[in-house]
Image 1 (spheres, rainbow, N blue to C red):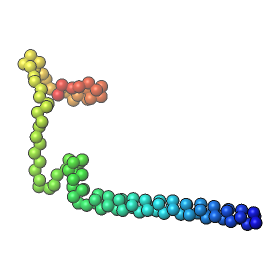
Image 2 (image 1 turned 180 degrees about the vertical axis):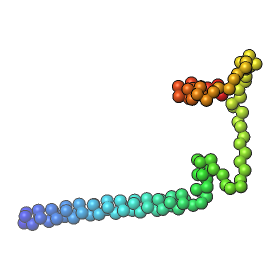
Image 3 (image 1 turned 90 degrees about the vertical axis):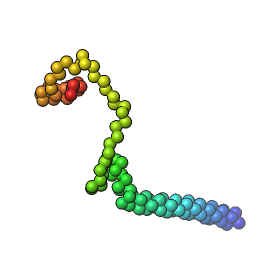
Image 4 (image 1 turned 120 degrees about the horizontal axis):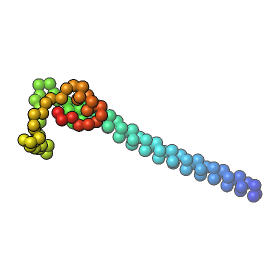
Length: 109
């Protein structure tokens, strides 16, 4: 009788483990379905012409054909030049500009 009870307990425990694994897999399946719907909505949004136009305007600074763009300066880049600093400044030659560029020195123009 103990042998039959042991066999029954073992079969019951295996059945319990299988049912738990089925519940876990069903939960994973449901989570993946939800994720699939979220991704399909995202694909629909990203492929819409409005989204493409918005990204082109904001990230790539593009405009529509025939559209005019007005740039408004914020006024934060106010530079003052003193008359004593502007003493006969000659335009720099091209090799000197390249020298400043490669040596990371700021050029005056």
